[in-house]
Length: 193
Image (spheres, rainbow, N blue to C red):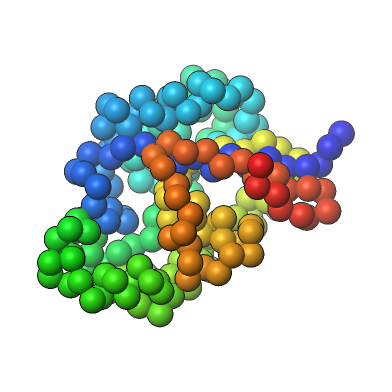
């Protein structure tokens, strides 16, 4: 029996409230966002041993639906919640470009060095996410896992897996309802499939 582990990273779909810096704001999915996630899953065989989800509605509502539909155990883990944007929570990029363009540009160019006001520092976010990731790998070795989470979480995990500098995490495009499959080999090697 293989002890390789497979973890599918699923980003939530379109969220109510528009394309703002949502962070910890607990908005639900739109109907279109829910259909995006269903379509992403319909293209796969739902043979996961376990589902893990961020507690925010835009992830957890769908994770609960999927777990019930396929009788898959579900764990809601707050460690996989999106980064907190502080004073920028709920702000639209267009508005920040009018009111705080220099700070926003600095953040896009180097999010490690330039933290939004009262936001979770990126390196603290990294510590939180990588610790939770390592816990999944240890707890679910040899299993197939679905992790329903956020764009920032997936970008950070891709940096970790691909040895990509975390300050350049915004180089990864992670669309709504995108799935990234990660293969953790028995020897510990991490592969993006």
